[in-house]
Length: 183
Image (tube, rainbow, N blue to C red; front, side):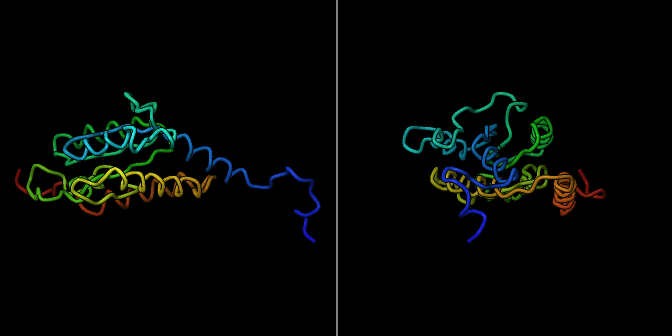
């Protein structure tokens, strides 16, 4: 006979961390960053067939200060990379990123000097979504996985340091340009 069995019915036991995780996961507002053909599938996800509203995400932010999820859909050019990073830096903490499509995740078929070979060289990515272009159902699955990740995130003083260390490690993996490379 445990402590839970002595409580009257209607009493729920949980932690503040779990309640905060559930609240965060159910109030994600996306900032869409559609750059190519994957953006059409992203827009389709907000339509009546797939309905992003059931996740509370029907409000796409026009300003990064009101968003906490960036969905990068399509290829990122070298000229667009600093703009993408600036928008990411303006987003409120905590913030998450979904890399949608093979072009955003790895540069896709565009292996040249003008395209960033993976958006993870610019911003830290939480969920990679493969496909060319990925279907709306795949984006919904990625959002569900992100919700699970948000719900199980830790709170406390070590969380911010862990995020900064992960971001620094991801950005230091491969540079956008090497110092000695010709322009």
